Length: 124
Figure (cartoon, rainbow, N blue to C red):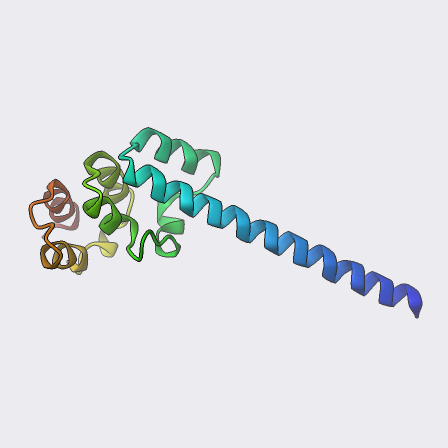
């Protein structure tokens, strides 16, 4: 009976350490992606995703930078190169609703070069 209690306790401790480590890794990845987009550093953005063995479309919905998704963060940061990389690595369906374009125009970023790239990719 004591052995089973010890095993269960050890399993729970190990699981909590594993999950917290994964959460910290995900937070660090998201932070890095936000920083590289803001700095318009497409090369480091690409390398970070490659090193983490993650596709952008797999983490896109989970990454929030200053309350915005990566496309809006790129528009607000005037990060054309990094923003183009993000747009081209997203499925067209993520851009077809035009929400990012409407957000940009509503927030004073209607002249952003990324608007044309989004429209071209989405077929708008």
